[in-house]
Image 1 (tube, rainbow, N blue to C red):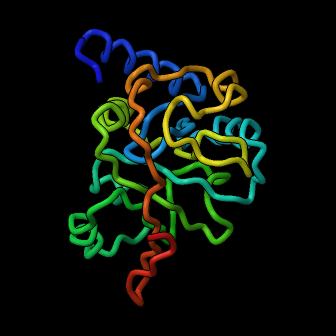
Image 2: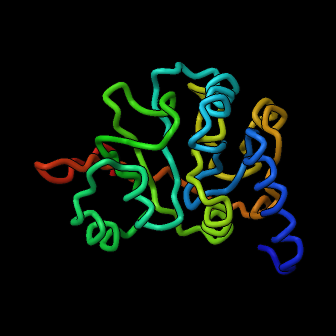
Length: 193
């Protein structure tokens, strides 16, 4: 836990500089540790696929700081989603049809995108300052287990990113991935509880 506001700000500034330069960051989310980049930069997104040794046709999720941001990155937002997001008890990634304004290579083949509104204080502050969404994918090589905390992130990932956020590295609280639901006209389809 950070006690020094100055260190927190320095961490945010370094992460911001990396994102603005098309680099990759390793950072804590409100679920597990993730690898991220500017979600509007296809070159940066490609770097994540390379680092994770992941097939390009597998979509990645996007993190935003506020539910209102959905209006900028989803073509037609069902306003009922705002009530739904307020009702969920755990971090929930929602898959929406009709993604707009994001790098094409992070979207699913059908043009859908998974978006999660974050609550984690460092991440919320970072995204608000960046003024764009960031990619989030588990900090592991594809096929390996997702890290429950920073100590479980492999060296290959740590050495493959451009900046490692210091905030919460000592937090050993086990973390789990978000719930995943698909939002559609027929209602909510739970893909991962």
